Image (cartoon, rainbow, N blue to C red):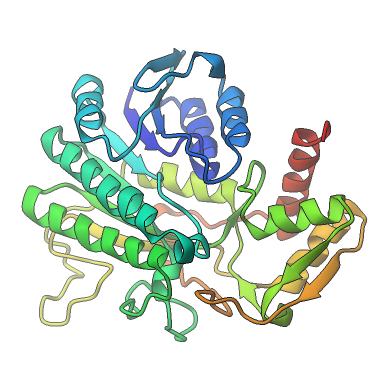
Length: 350
């Protein structure tokens, strides 16, 4: 039985990935600091859904439920992170833990350095000390920044990030490559494109819009609604990650040309993929899907574009489709309906 560490397991994607991997026969160890960037109760509810007694959670105490374990740890705590790697001897690591959110990075850039750069360095150092078969780490579509070369391809220029969040994710990609080069750690970076679905974060548009509609309140839509996103259902995302785990990159990739290098491939055991739906959806159509699921009209207040935001995201995901032999297949209406049903269940008492 292969053992996987999932950092950020109390988070949105981490929770779904843990459920899938345990059901698929993996042994899972989850790590999360359970910080208060958003409602801690939602993070605890996700852990309860995974079978953990959340009243037993203490810092650096490992809880175990069959083939699923959880430990509350901060990624900046290198000593205890390394000790966990030493004790558990992981086959695979999926690093999803990060300080999320583009707009919050305008208010608190230091938290992005702590979690996303220092924290990721500690994961790399731990993989160096206690080697793993494959490190998969979360990057972001936000690294494309000022690029208007649509759809975004992994080899597009990513030198113009619009906010500290994007800059920290770009840094992760370069840090991982340096460790693949120096210490032969097989690394795959995934540039996530607007993931949505049940148990989603309260700071994401789907949650914000749904909450406002349920409460019959106004909500803001930026750039006067003229935006689109490559919305990708969380179930398709975690299925992609599961398929990717045993497919670690190897050295001397024949597709890499050192005289014409590209960012997504390397002669070292390193690769980058976009992970998205390959089908951008207009924001107003997304809102209509929520209205349909709730059978209710939203009270929209149109606003100009926010600093750090981009008008559209659109992933070229051909290389990942070929690599793992899987394409996202969840329809927007079905994914939004699944979110709305879970939202109403989780908030029925409020």
